[in-house]
Length: 200
Length: 286
Image 1 (cartoon, rainbow over the protein chains, first blue to last red):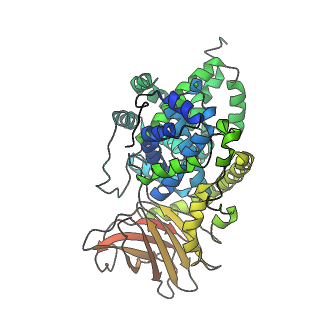
Image 2: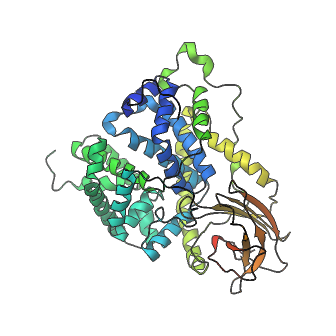
Image 3: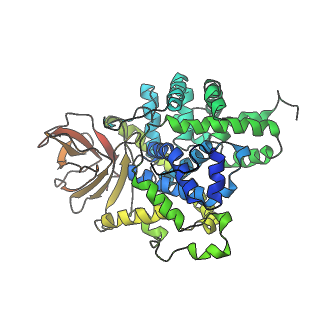
């Protein structure tokens, strides 16, 4: 990791403010904190590592350009970075018409009660997954959800589908999808409260 | 606002935080959001919950070079708020790679659909659903293209387009007018591939990536399947240490491929698949 003279413990929002003023080192520190998360998320959405790199490079270019627009009142830096990376990844998926991936996600969830991103097939053993504590809690919370609730949340978040698209995909009434999504997110919020409070 | 119990808008907060509201719903909800502290607080918290979902993805370290690339690209573009007259010389550098026209990275003619499923039998059942789903997709694609055009003034360079264009240029030379192309990916951060099928020339090209090399004594084998018939071997290939391979294989004359897939097999290949197929793609019949 590169040198970091003064900013090791800078709050995230300070880094964003410094980036907005043109401080490249601040961008580097933001990358050190959230680049891995963004890359992992992009991999989960786009599949190919080469594509995920483009997504992350694009996302951080956007972060750099639009840092001045970050509003701490609207949420954390982590959530902001995740939103940008996710949006970029979904754009890429859409532009390349990889939609069938999502169909597959539905099939996998339905048939095995197992989640798309949590059960990647053929993942090489040497891809050493260093799970942070947060990641472990989030995974456990997701795994604890009733499968139908988890499914609609994952199709929305990782697949980028709207509620009506999910309903069509699963051949379920729209109202059912809405109810599951709301109930699932509410349970996640309860389960993740400790993590959310630490991060706040 | 004190209408807490009957506040119908709260039904939308979770879907909004997940980006799953339909466009019309989102527009009206956002209009409401601007005036409602209750919903705004709810959305703020649910967005954090949604943000945490990002960490549920399998954690994969980005390649070290990515950091340098991001920083060097940042050096050529000033943040929006900080472009001062004294720094204007910095903005768009003459040395940046040429951007690729959008139509250059479009899919080859007659791109068909894209599938990966645990086993080929499941594919047929989902083909109808895929074509159905693509109607949604094309609408959304058109809409997001329009949105992006509005946003275009702020985009200094589309590095994704440039990189995709570079990578596609090799492949493009293989693509004749009648060639069908299919992209497939596995679940999660797993292998992906593009197939290019030229039925007239009896040739199929597979470009695989993120696929770890088969262990020693093993190989990858590509299969072509005609509806209702056993798989026919199209040949074997292996990836390099970067997980990539580009293989050009001959399709036996007369084989009307409906599905292609890859299996891992003993070196030299097998007469029939002995492991679970992946990177399966369906093909439109001619």
